[in-house]
Length: 370
Image (cartoon, rainbow, N blue to C red; front, side, top):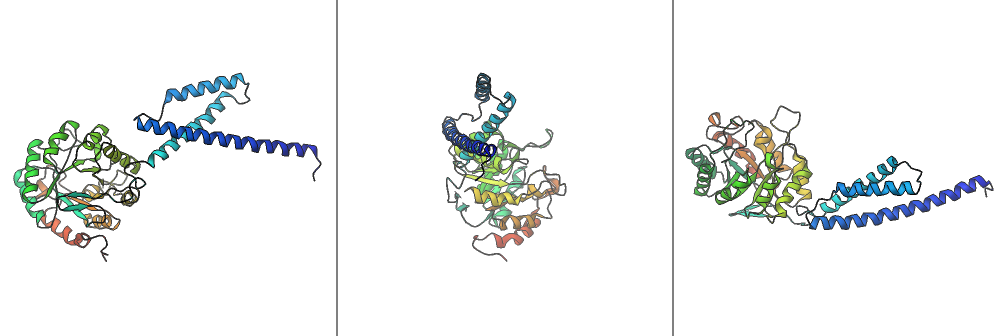
């Protein structure tokens, strides 16, 4: 036994520290449980979890208490310590919220299957193609393309009636006339019609003509639009924002589901990086993670990812291999004269070759493609 009184004193003080640490840990745990309860109530009331006024009130109260107790720590240190506690509490609330997200497999383990006509999307059903022109330009263009694609078993026909363009002077679409043309061409050839909605004011009229509403990459963060399409009964194809994280993409889908529309199809279409060989960088890892963490069907838009025709087959095969439920491809009778994206759309011969190359993948997912 060590009889050195100084060492004995240190040992006793360390025991005291251990006891205090345990008390602090217990208090932190109690605080965390209370924070979770507050967060749950805020979520139910659609309130923000972050309240800067409340945070400032707590810091002011701690400053006064520290002064009254003649605390050894300067107030800057006290604030720094408690801000870390506040941040950890917010992170804890977020993690608890994510466990209850409607898009999460923790809430719904089985795959969501969306039925459009005789086409079943997701849940291990056979992969499919969405195909058609970038923009609706004329009745002849849409009719001829639909008739061509019908022979390849395409069930979902795309065409933009409203076009979001980088330049305000670019072709902006035909509007309602385009909806009439696109819907008519699709129905005449036994296909569902999908088109983009850009404005909350257009949701109602587009829903009259379209079988699927598309929210484009530029509108993924348009929360008013997400809520509005969430109030519709039509399925929604939600494209990932070109600069959005996967988490932001999933939360965008949550906006739609939270409004009562469970029929959401996620669409990976490439993200903006420093690379210039392609229009965007196709993030296939997002497909695998979306299938793992959510129960929603996932489609890959290879056309907008590549921005070029010569690698579409390879990207489509990779998308199917990683688990995509479908592939989105743009087809035009004469891409050279297309009013938008003329360098990335396939002509009829190009689509025929594309389809021949990916046809083995357009079978039930339990079929192994070698």
